[in-house]
Image (cartoon, rainbow over all chains, first blue to last red; front, side, top):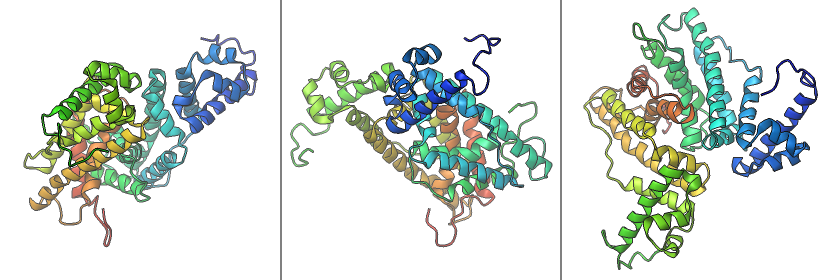
Length: 207
Length: 207
């Protein structure tokens, strides 16, 4: 969409980056206040103090704004926890997830809700999650290196999904009250299952 | 809202039941065709061939229609699987869940999406899930009776959430392609975790 060789105003801190930061801040604030149903190009432009024409030209529509907020989350230098044990790492990861889902307003929940209504937001969301789960595979690799898991046949993504899915299911879909014990319990169940032979890749099978 | 002693036209198969069936069929069809964003009182009344005034009087708004569709799902005489083993039961349950989530259009997914936008639909959804998980606790009880699980300290809901959550997470939130092996794998991980001591209630703790 833009010429990658045209670096005018595209250096970090340049005008393009500044406008993007202002607009995405405005999207997050509008999402928090009104939910995605109240999100409009006009509302975002006004809040950001940016010309409407600029917002339309660069983001096209609300789906474009949502997708870019999600993409921006993926650009943060996030690192998975490194506590020294698989159980500790998965518990810390789950605590981070639980915090992001129970904070009010929750940007994470607003973006999940929005992704049911915008194919573009849904694609960005799926990409972000794919990247984050891929980043977290190192937790499983480290556990194998430490001898906590039988190498090399564990499906890391299967284990990570098992550890984290109960958080999303309870808090986002079932709308249960947050349980401070859940991050550790869900992590523990996944670690015990792995130790008992779950998530093994069968011969010739890929994850 | 209605007088429980007034049974005119409220007998099964009476006019009230017929109108409800027509209206809820119309809601399901509209959801399937247009998603909940295209759901309107007028569209439902027209499709059902029922006076708009009747639809407004009885269901008030779109949230009321959504909640009643979910309530109606809860009135079906659903029984959890009974295959003779915990792994078999949880696998069969997961297969049922997977089918409901991957069918296109999926009423289950449309209702989950809608529940992000209607507090009334969200409450109905939470109630339905609470009831269904409570019904499924019998799977865990039977497993304890058969000696498959150490009695009586397993948290049945924790085990059931662990077994089923990966299906919802993968198919609804992560939008992964359906994996025909997932129902059994997720069930197996939960059973192995339980066998290894996960989901144990601590002394003095309730589920």
